[in-house]
Amino acid sequence: MQSWAPVDVPRLEGSGPPLRLYDTSTGRVRPTAPGPEATMYVCGITPYDATHLGHAATYLAFDLVNRYWRDLGHDVHYVQNVTDIDEPLLERAARDQDDWVVLGMRETALFREDMAALRVLPPRHYIGAVEAMGEISEFVAKLLAGGSAYRIDDAEFPDVYFDITATGHFGYESNYDEQTMLQLSRERGGDPDRPGKRNPTDALLWRMAREGEPSWESELGAGRPGWHVECAAIALNRLGEQIDLNGGGSDLIFPHHEFGAAHAEALTGAHPFARHYVHSGMIGLDGEKMSKSRGNLVFVSKLRSADVDPSAIRLALLSGHYRDDRPWTDDLLAQAHRRLDRWREAVALKAGPDAGQTITDLRTHLADDLDTPRALAAVDAWADAALERRGTDTAAPGRVRDAVDALLGVRL
Ligand SMILES: Nc1ncnc2c1ncn2[C@@H]1O[C@H](COS(=O)(=O)NC(=O)[C@@H](N)CS)[C@@H](O)[C@H]1O
Ligand SMILES: [Zn+2]
Image (cartoon, rainbow, N blue to C red; front, side, top):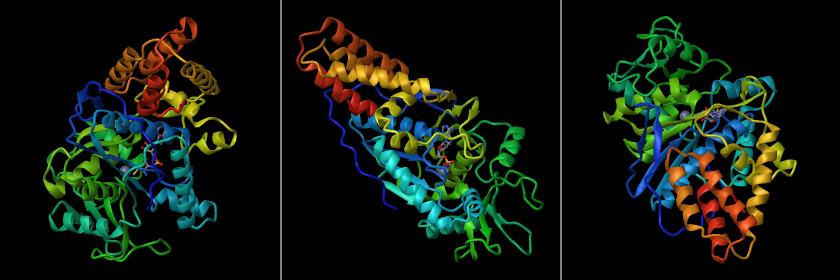
């Protein structure tokens, strides 16, 4: 599947400290240490109700990681999927008398447009589950052959499940207890109460074809994949056995990323699958998580069609810390507009105070687990000084503009 338009990123002089990020599996902020090419897998959308501000906040967080690693001089091999076949998509298509394929294509196209408008750097590989069906079924067949997976004893639908005891590390990514895992498995598409499973939380790998459901021929028999194995296969086959970062919103901590890691590790034996598991907080509206099921969604495309500057949307979402569950409010957007106008006014000056310290501060704060509130405050300070006390450095406004573009993706 084609990704979206590339974004030019100004090259800045010098570089900052190593990027440190909170890792869910160890519960600590730790330095990332990618090689010359950093490898990052961030889960993509299930293409309906796209792109709401929750989606946008999550993809902006990982865009900052991408930009910061590039600022350090790394290449970034960024891979993202599209869950263009899954229960929720089929249900939404049925509800709206829509063809699920058309719905998926339409919403994915809208998502690409929104990401390009927000100046999110595109993934090098943007892969749909449907186009990856061959490699996914092959991955499942290998798990089955290797004994990490089994067919459930159900004559009508002998579906394939993953055995959570296969790797001996299951649970290390989320660190959730059994009770929590059971509850979240139930809430997020699992079937812990299905009779015949070895362990209630064992995850579905391959669902044999049901009447009236889309299915694909495979060595496993006609059917379609479980949700987690799609990401494990797409990531592993493009980024290798161990990656620098596996990311998504905090609602993916379990079961999705726990199983994605377990599937990959069961196949390769390489542990941990990702050196960092990074999760962003939930954007809420009126006190509830912004989510498809609740329907309390604010869409990027609606704001864009109301002529809201995408850079203001970016600034509004970056004004909070990426890991915090936080509300979206109209006031947040109004504040962001004011901030954007002030920064633009300051960089339009002929000269300003020295930019060096500001760029150093920007990098230091971003390197500290993407501390964007402090990073934005550093630019506020420079803009205030430039507008109030002026300054004599004629290179400063241009340097600040380029740093804000390269590191925050905000176009001044
Ligand atoms: N309210 C929200 N705030 C922040 N991030 C959110 C919110 N709702 C969803 N997300 C994140 O947006 C990304 C896409 O969500 S999604 O469309 O439901 N799709 C999926 O979770 C799967 N296709 C991942 S393979 C996920 O990382 C999810 O955690
Ligand atoms: Zn995923």
